Image (cartoon, rainbow over all chains, first blue to last red; front, side):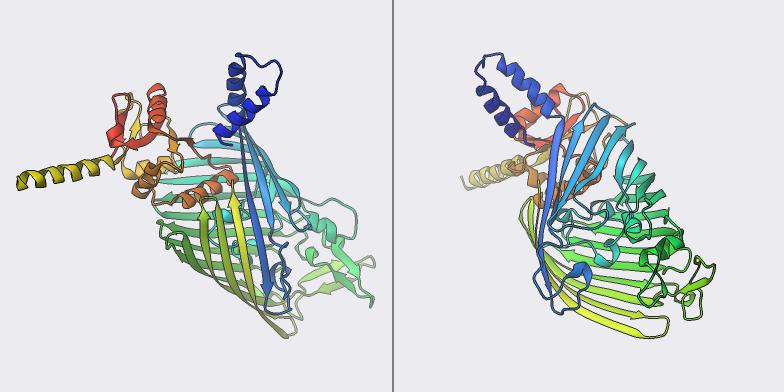
Length: 399
Length: 136
């Protein structure tokens, strides 16, 4: 909040008081000092898109124009409780109701305690910094692209955790290594929605260590995050209309440990902006391991920055799934063994071309075209190919 | 006469050049000389202290100040919109807070002279004995 605005508000308020006197100057100063402890920030993404074909792919875009799927915003309040202690609250709102953990309401709420200029402790509801840009992926204005790479950043079921973390800066010459280590837990609403009972499912061991080295125009990030999926296989079985026992998709994770390794790079010299990332999601059990990669480059012509990005996602452990492979074996009530099979493999890619136009220092207009291709192979060898084009525009602001 | 005119023109040009130079200043109690990389790290919030460990609070200029684009062109290579995007990332990850912004040099000099931890930037022609030049 700008100081002049604060003074205007306070002065207007006091002038309305019947007992306004010269001592109001003191009150103004005191109130201004109090308001200086509070900072309000926010962001808004207004996005519309439409696809060339009916076969909906990411974010359910089809041939109709959709302006709600990716329209959202957030308001953050930072309260400086003391020189070393801060409280941060981030609330989010969406134009479209969303299932699971991406819903309206409190997104983050945490205390930060500054141990020194280089070390900070945080506790509360915190973001999981899964990949290079995960902890601010929804803040469109901060990114060059219209949206963060979809195949990499979308659909990560754990966006936040309730726990603690430490941030520590290590100075190396002109460069800085920031180490971020965290531990916490989070309710798993997707598991709860898919389960055949009313239990609450909690992922109680979300933890990771990330290191970001920034020097001059370069940024390198290395990270590892792990968690154990809650529940047992039996929590997610159901019987279909033909009397066959089936497994909800969420169930394929049950009890397995997922580990996310990420290696990212960024370059920004004011003209060229380059980003690249490689991610490996390794899961115990039969659930697919994934490799996810992207690279993008943009060049600034004044306020206009055209860019191109390529994303690719693939399964890495295809030999572990097949018709005669017991990917999962579960005991049903009659103690018989049931076999479930997963999709054997898939490859997905998106080639994106777009441009960002900075209308002002806090408002940008972006346009992006995405060419999407998907090939999946079932355990019986059948393949399925999908392709589509998505056209999107977005107005993104911060304050 | 021609020589005098040429000399006068050259001096005027030089004066104009000197007026355009942006310098980083701090409280006279600070004796450090900062490299461009150190200035960049401080003004992008990557460091909060001088190389000798002295805690520093940076003071920015408002977007309207013409000196701001000159300073960032020289040290950080970022436009106003790029700076806004940069600080947005830090604010919403809780990893940094944008600096306090001051609109005019006089106010900045007064702040710096009364607080040994503040540093900012002004035009070199505005330097007084209330501040010391840390980088130019």
